[in-house]
Length: 193
Length: 193
DNA sequence: CAATGTGTCATACAATCGTATGACACATTT
DNA sequence: AAATGTGTCATACGATTGTATGACACATTG
Picture (cartoon, rainbow over the protein chains, first blue to last red):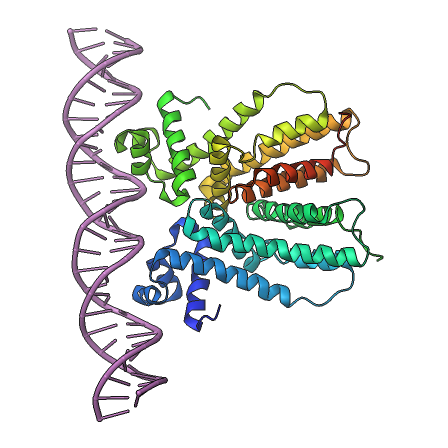
């Protein structure tokens, strides 16, 4: 990524605006106001509006990855999957910001070729993470019998995105956690507690 | 709902614009252009922009319900669930339009109190439909053992929304169908073919 | 027939938009 | 020291926005 400090601040400001006021209220001027900069400065870093939008999406992916890599190592496949995926659910303010941005981009990418690639990479990243977790579970013999790892990956990813989508329009944290547990439990056997 | 003919045409035009150019390109003028009407006419039916947005969302829900009620009656619980939920996946142009609108509103509702209620009703409607399908499956003894009907409803709804979200950014119909089958199969036993 | 209501349209206004451009300060490179 | 590059800002342009308002045609109601 290799972004400067100001670029990061601008992207964070963009994320805040999307999460607070919606995807369609983003403009070079509104982001500049939020970041406390002149419009020209924002424009210098991201010449067009699309550049700004893409930057916001890439920044949220970075933030999520950063949070995931901070997780402590755990042996139990169920628990580590649970922890990893909870990272993506809107369970606090920061994750809520990222969740809203993610859903907004999922909608926007379907009609904007310029956003499509950045979004596709996000989906791919999620699938690879889940795939990796399931492979680990398989290695230690914790996957449920008779399921396709391929299909389980795709569906768990879909369910996580669905939970995110429901989560940003509700504040029932327990429903999110229960839904995630149920989804993981359909694929991975819980370890001995 | 009880809407006039012109109002319906305006809402359909709004849906087309959202599906083609994105949620944030909707304006009273752009919708009027799409519908072949004067801006003032659109404004007469939907005085503010938010009224227009809400109308588009309610109209897609109507279209989906209309399509569901057109489905032929089937005995097998698995098959009827499959047919019912396929109705919501972006598998052709019309369903794709509705899927994009749905995801766009899921994002928008999280930051716009005025859209929140309409969106919440949509989620509730989906859950009730699924709940009804699962209850039928339970009655005829096709649900898998040991699962909570409540939890299965919530998770199947989440997975469907997740598949929709992935589907609008891909044109792999088979992946959608396989994903849906897998998700239903985790909850409902297929009938004898 | 008169009055009222309803749907359609055209126009007007201030605000905001994306984008282009040039000025200025500072750092880096030559 | 001179030249070049980079980050910040202010300003300007035409286009588009949401919304308000009034005119006109037509149907409905009194």
